[in-house]
Image (cartoon, rainbow, N blue to C red; front, side, top):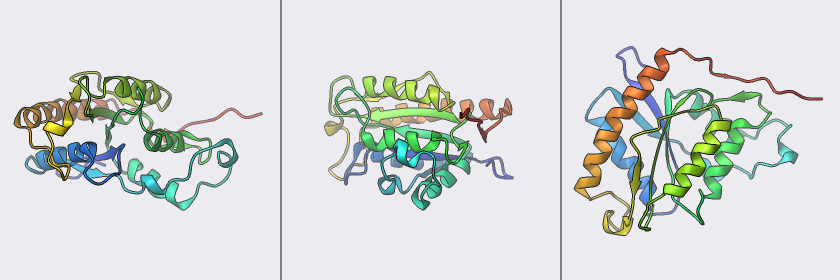
Length: 206
């Protein structure tokens, strides 16, 4: 939640957990930019790799502790940033599983509901993560997220823009991220000013 000093708190989700991940590097770059401003704080969500695969069998039973821990991190945030790679024209299973767990019937709360969402992504391809981001926007519709439509960030040919440790080194991309974060922070604050209801969602059952 917004601090008494007006700082907004953002939960950042990286769709790749590998060492040297470009998308985790994007999250770190955004964290570094935010740390110099003081008006926005970005914390990377932990525990995605610990989530079991969501399925019908576990959709109507008590959520495991790993799911509750991720839920709590999302619930405490004012907004969400997702950095996604692109696998086979879509987003990775790790990221889809994360979204599934946030919106399953049990618990009957969706911590993503009406959270302002910003999407970024990096890949080694020429068009970046264009197709994965379009898929993510479709999933965000079901999740009741408020999606920032523009500007868009597609970091292409990432091998030339990140170090071997996954740190973003390309100055032009860093400048774009700074401008993107300006717009995202404005989007978060304007969305929050609408005071949309969050968390609770009713499910119809027979």
